[in-house]
Amino acid sequence: MFLLILKSVIKMKQYRRIRDLREDADLSQRQIGEAINIPQRTYSYYENGGRMIPPHVLVALADYYGVSVDYLLERTDNRNLNK
Image 1: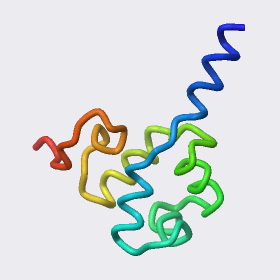
Image 2: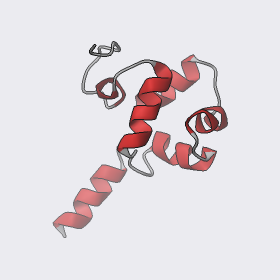
Image 3: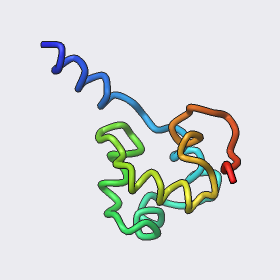
Image 4: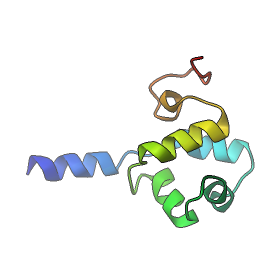
């Protein structure tokens, strides 16, 4: 029972920042998908919380936008990468 509840909570997480960054750049989901080599439908699932974003996709998105993974995951409001 606990595992079922945990899965539903995890799936409900929406990744608002990837949507906001995409919209700020006036890009479509298809364009972002092509840029990071995933189908538009898969990207849509990530953006809307239908699927968890795998680490390699998070890194690709962070690199594409020049932000940190922590920023994408809303763990910080600092867009800058730690270098």
